[in-house]
Length: 90
Length: 227
Image 1 (tube, each protein chain N blue to C red):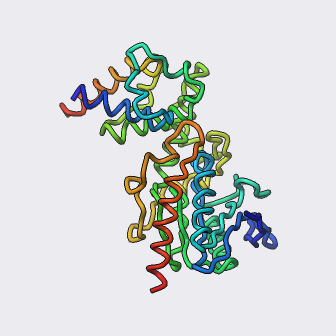
Image 2: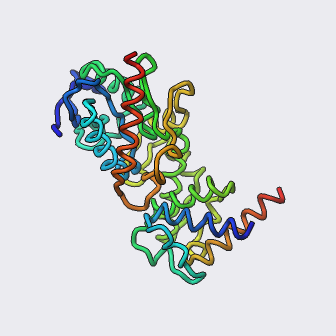
Image 3: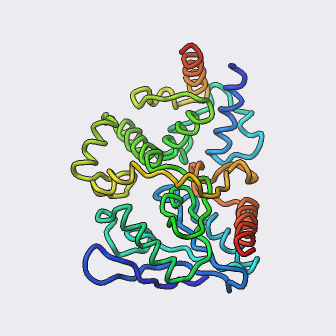
């Protein structure tokens, strides 16, 4: 599941940020997202989270949204993986 | 591409005029396009106009109206309701004598039941509001304070609310939240187009290949109606 989460998350970021195919494959855990990419404003973050919910089959509560989870690719991936593991148990 | 005025109902008094972009001679039919709403409308604006250009090449005329309170409209958005938008669309469709109404995303919530309609990647009012509320919550958090969805929804239902720069009235919010696309309407899903939906993008973008593909499907649908 970890691998599919990683791949799906890269594909979501490719769609949302309009990246060239393959570009997201170069994202490292410390690649900066929110605060580093000017196009990721609040509306774009809202869209990104909704897309993550739809494509990973998870639900993100508003109070789970914080700057830290969105700061780097690694933090967002860890969050998504934890949410998926939680959803699989439920 | 020509901006044309069409008569539109107002909250009180005589009808006003709103703009619509019109393109094509219509030898192969006329389509009214209801744009995607709010932020998604901005993201899809160029895609929508590119689709109109591709339709014109197939001999299909298209009309892209401003909903009252949106884009170039001089009416206040705050006094609009979904019922008024539906009435405006009916008047617009009658004025331009269209053969088909194409609803894009949230625009699909306003295709009249008594006219041939086609939906592109339709979504519900609740989904759109959820997204707008989330953007406001993220923005508040970034600014260092906290807002909750329940409190914002209560505020919206009492006083109206400003979401991502759009001032929505309390009645609009309450009615819009319950809207879903008519289930029996023919639809074009994003998965049938080459690439991801442009409304998902962080920035407005364009994709001529997708626009041509959408226009091709609309043209096929229109040809099927004529038979």
